[in-house]
Length: 237
Ligand SMILES: *[C@@H]1O[C@H](CO)[C@@H](O)[C@H](O)[C@H]1NC(C)=O
Ligand SMILES: *[C@@H]1O[C@H](CO)[C@@H](O)[C@H](O)[C@H]1NC(C)=O
Image (tube, rainbow, N blue to C red):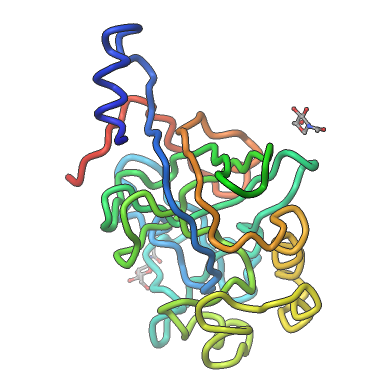
């Protein structure tokens, strides 16, 4: 069911106010070290770009037009702290690349989503902010940023930033396969790698239900941006 359908039914009952995006979707995981596409000023309209960092993954860039470290001679990378963490057994925070329409949906940059899981991770809630788009993603696909989760199609970022193997740590798609292999990653990225084998129970691309929520400060304090427009609907324009 897409949001337009949801909205159509909701409009009869409560006027369709603050519906937000919702539905069911799929997940994958990645950490490619690249500048997230929502970190380009050109992609985020009236909203601030997601913060991006220099090669150390810590120093925040003030210029949102510096090219990505996934391009030759690029100088902008994802900041180290955009990795997931657990608050307690039932709640975690993190960041995703999302597509709702099956293409690069820049207009949804900065929105936040509550993900709950289907057939896995019972009773757990993962609150995430969308920091990246992906032309390679399908509709309602959430590619969760997990260090050591595989670099995917962009192989240059982690090798130039951290000296990672050419196809990243572990498998290019999927990444490392055990908690102990997280030690291959730079120390600054190891906590997010361990998260996968801890709170996330090494779930392999679990199905989710998603619901747009107002962004919590726990996330926006790290990205320096938010998009709390809960009146958006799913459309490709
Ligand atoms: C921002 O970076 C771009 C790309 O490197 C460069 O062309 C531009 O001059 C920079 N802007 C500022 C204000 O430094
Ligand atoms: C987890 O933390 C959240 C936010 O502080 C809180 O609302 C929730 O009750 C906590 N859950 C457990 C099981 O401790």
